[in-house]
Length: 464
Image 1 (cartoon, rainbow, N blue to C red):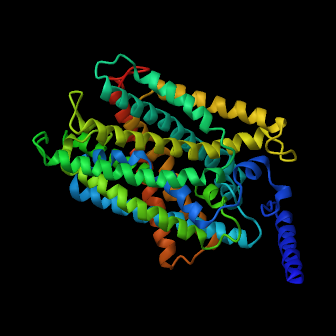
Image 2: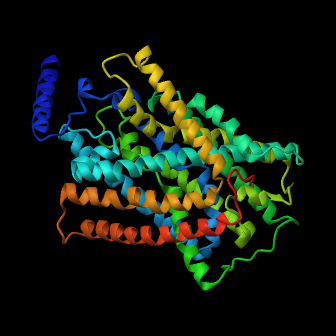
Image 3: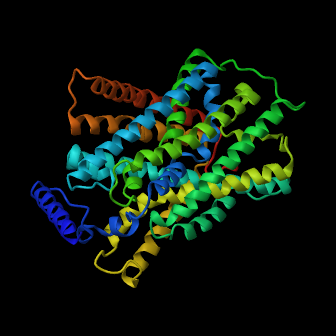
């Protein structure tokens, strides 16, 4: 057994050497890892842990905006768009996994999205497109998480004190202090138990929202059910693309390589199992909340369906039920926010930490504490200043999530495996990439237009 192990190690070293000659780095050797990969992206997890991470990264409170998206698409268009986005992202994430497995077999395990961009597209693409795009999405998710956490705290406060005078930015600040503590969790792998709880929490509050929508829809307080599309032809057209951006964001991940990096080798086949865990939760939660919320409130569904559970500041459901639902959401959004902090933490760790010293040495702890705290403080400040949750989602979907999750995986696969131009997979990938590129342009215009329209009703630090 020892001889076989030595032979295998010798073969790995040979593959590693050949990759060094071509300018790539062998990420299977801990001695060659930078501090970000060594400390934050520890490869110790199982496929089940991968499923927990994936579920938390995708199934977050953003899916409470799905009924609102359906108000701009209608029944047929909305449900079809949800199904299509689910199929395309499942296919897309599997393509990324296949590409990652391919490079891993060759001795060049890519741990980050920017490394895939560097090896497949070139250094300039990685530096000026892939890396900034992913960092922007992850940090944007942290800002949105701080905003949603503050909104949940304010909702709970108003349940028991309807005449309370505390403002939204105060709750966002309180939540930001909590995030400061969570941000110090050292690695992605250290979140595995938190993300298991997160998976259970998203199932719990999606069930609560579905039950609540059905109850209100059948009660005397139910609003008139009108499923027609509101607005002029121009507004309805822009609304379609705005809704597509929201749905795209709902299914978005943007950190697939970083999640796969947490899996202990051998990696092959484990990612697919993790994705199956995640998408079983997606089917359960997204469609139950989207369909029940739109059924109950029709074209009156708001940016987040929870806002429909209050009528003129009076709850339409029992206080204890709304409290329980919001506590579940508050806890789960904390896990989602910390997951998206990890890639940004990894960037800071790579820049400021010393991989030759212990992770918990003073030399590494002090810059980690300062950089992560500063990151959370800035995100909390931006969330308090710009409380436009639904509109921000649409912008993220158009500018960031569609390129990372719908375009780049197709391009990476075609450039890596070079399938024949007569093959089905080449044309499927090309069609998805081109169609998604068109949606980026139109969706960007639609989402920015919506922000400009809504900005007239909002001020900095608005109490919405």
